Structure formats: C-alpha cells, structure tokens
Image (cartoon, rainbow, N blue to C red):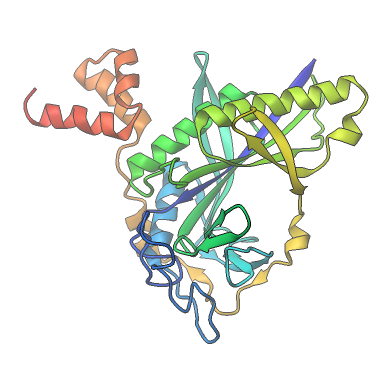
Length: 336
C-alpha cells in the first residue's frame, strides 16, 4: 500500500492595471507586443520600479490565510534562460517572501483538513511563445505582469484533496478581488509536485513536477496518471530508473504525463538580490489597510446559515462562486 504526497505551486496573476515593474498595461487579448516599454524589453539603462498595488494585494492574501506578513522582503534575480523574458532572468522573491506560514482548510468527504501554505511571493510573469510549423513567435505583452506564487506544504494526499484545495484557493482570490483567476487566460495555473511512499513511511521520496496545469479536470487527471506511473515503477522494481527528479508536461489528448526537462535545484538558478530594487518595507499603516479584507466564502456560508436560515447545502452552492454570492446578495438588497 502506498501513500500519495502532493504539494502545489499556484501562479495567479494579480489584477493590477499596470505591470509589476513598469507602467505598461496588463490588458489581456490585445495585439501582440503593444504593451511593452524599455523596462519590460530589458533595454540598456531601463530600471524597474515596484508596483505598490501588487504589494497591497499580496498582503491581503496573506491576511486571508492567517499568514505571517514580512514587513521586510527582498526581490532577487533568478537566472534562467527564458526565451519569452528578454532579460534572461526573472525578478522574484527567494529568501524573504512577503507572505509565509499560512493555512487553508478544505472539506473532503465531510471532513475538514488543514493544508499548510509555505509561502506566497511576488514575481514577474514571462511572455508567451507561439510555435508555428517552422518558426516561433513571441508576444511580450504578458512579460512583467505581476504574479503571486502560492506554495503549499506537501500536505495533500489525493487528487480529490488537491482539487478541493485549488477550488478553495481560487474562491478566496476571487472574493478578495485581487485576481480574476481566469484559468482559460492563464491567470490561475498550477504546478503539481507528486511523489509516493509506502504507507506508514515518513520519508519524502523523489518528486516529479507537472507544469502549467490550467483546469481542475486536467489537474486531477494528471495527478492520477502520475501516481499510477510511480506505483507501477515501484512494483516492477524500476522506481529509481523511471522516477527521477524532473519536470513533466500533461498531454491533454492522451491524459498522460511526458518528460520535459530535468528539474533544477535553487542553486542552479544562482539567486542574488536585485541591485536595481530597494528592500520592500511594509509600514504599519499599509499593513493595517491591506488587512481590511472583505467577507470570505466560509464566513459568508456561516452567516447565511446563522442569520438567513439558509440550508447548509444551499449555502454551499451560493458561495461556490463569487458571481453566485454577489447575485444572491444583490437580490436580498433589492428586497427579495
């Protein structure tokens, strides 16, 4: 018997009007390479300036998941060749993220379970590659869009738990109004780290990272395939040969995962503090303002049941999406 160990890394685009380090628009779907400037094109002499609104939204998320907000955080350069990021490095947070040590509670099969959130850090998104038959194109409109990367503890034990966690996280982001979390547009995408171990063993074995999953169904199918692949390799005494630390992609037509590249460790990215950006200092006034967050789904559900006499199952349906809850409350405000 085996136990599944899953940790998730979610990248969500923050819904600021401008990019994280320049004043270019974050508007989606416009003509390619129209929202670019010397900073996001990495032209000589251009300098990044941090978007304060992105910091505020990150703090709001931290408050929603009972996390520690670091009053001092640092941006680093993550050296890695990105064909769709002209600098050939990404500005991200490494040693000191703005948010860490949070938690989120999910309901699976009628039981409540706590899932730890290791950290949530700010970084810039890359652009988009478009591959044609004999050439590739790049659209840099998305390069520099603010991302919040939310990293869970390896506390998830099944694909059902992973999907429940992601749906809860998606809902919180929408109710906070810090991201549209549109999965079709890539505003909410997930990397799943999956490993197995014999039941009762506390050791963490080799994990495989499945990249860029952008639908709840595909996330579930990818995890289920990867778990089966690893169990079969273990049972056939081929675990060490077939399960290696690597990044894999999910084939949405065949419902299988395929090797993409060997997985890098943090040392290979050669992180160092970005010399063009100051240390981020969050003062008490900004912290207090960002912690004034709206009512979250679980709080709404409890209030509907307690004050409005709504049945628990009905309340669950109402708070299942931000749009449902808003429509319900608009009806009440109109006197219905």
